[in-house]
Image 1 (tube, rainbow, N blue to C red):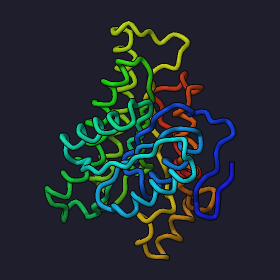
Image 2 (image 1 turned 90 degrees about the horizontal axis):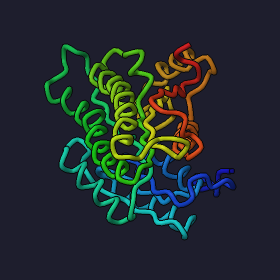
Image 3 (image 1 turned 45 degrees about the vertical axis):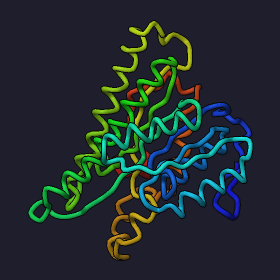
Image 4 (image 1 turned 180 degrees about the vertical axis):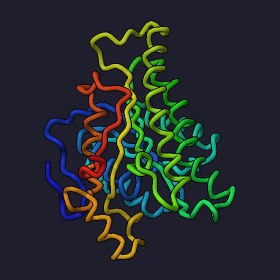
Length: 275
């Protein structure tokens, strides 16, 4: 598996996700785009969600369609901060792709202010997109996956959900909330599978896990002053920022059938920041 000059990933020779359909929220830029590309390289048909940025969405769709013409790539516009839009977009993915095997809850926003300056809207908007949106998308996906008896749900949290950060109380709360969401959904998935007479057994199963990126070199960090960025690097044991592709590899691993014995877990990818 190697990267091309365009940033796309050539086909994974293992094709561990061949025949699977994956929906990645916020899947057209940054970490989300890297996840979409990595899942496509492993053989998955990819549905990428976005809100604004239609040009970037169309570019990703065209790139993946050109690179993997035998795999359907679709893009879906919707506001993850609105429950009705979450359900509409998820239904559109299933309608256009025919099924859903893998959900990656990656969409997220920041509105950074100190507690003293944070408005009601600043708090509610971040919680709505980062936490409530993940729940509403997962709720709809879980219903579909339970009918089929298999599935993967992977929530993208953040190291800030573990450590907290000045000026990010809303973001930290939303990302920390994903930990509880992940573990509770994982337990309920197994419970509901048994009720639906789809015992977990030795099969693919229906798992729910989370990935917690550390400081990753994306547009979200582009506005940080150089001095602050150097201080952040100095706090990371491996001495550098992470790459989006490093998050994508862990997501692809958790999405594979071979990861059926892993559920309800939080996977840190942060260069040792939490040691």
